Length: 268
Image (cartoon, rainbow, N blue to C red; front, side, top):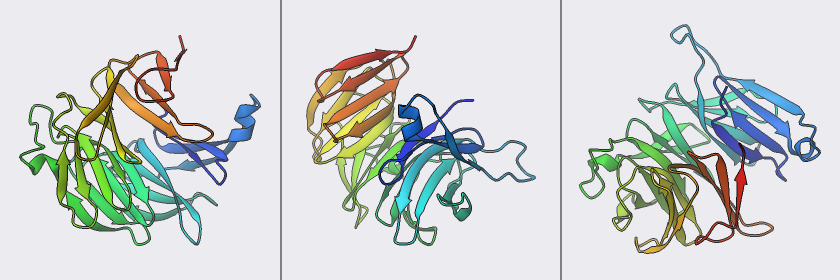
């Protein structure tokens, strides 16, 4: 059983949450720090007569409103589920994608989802209604037919949407949904990581390098990593700025800036 989606949830960050095939598990973080992990709760994904197997959980994001904390899960059955973190019940289901989910990102009451179907969709998380849709592969500046149309990652703020995958990495205006920047300075590789961090754009994927760019597309820095392909980047700015990179390697790189690896953790 492989853990695909992974996040910290709670205020403060109380749980380590992992999504697997057909289920989501949460461990109390304090118990993990004390080397005695305790499973706090489990959410089982629904199954139907049409599907013999429960769907994989490919992406997780925590969302909080004035009523409750929620867990949003993007899955292999083309659906996004909103679960209550209080009792694990399904609150809403987001329907519209025609292929499996790769990535989720939320900002306030908005959520963005990226899928194998080639679309990025914006949703109102309160009502599970789609508000906008873009298809980057249909833009001449972004299309890379040799990689396909899938979108591997999406990141949003109140003002900006960043995405990439088969199509080139691109920045969009959240209010008008106009294409603002095509990151043509980046090498030609499949994008698995596309993140907005402050005034910077961070990208990685089917390359051993990790890149930092400006919103206008200017390449600021590139860093060699342990992996031949990067799949995961976790960023933290407390108590200090750190980014952790992982991919096709038995090493995890820990970086205190975007120019060199501060530490490398080896697992086997």
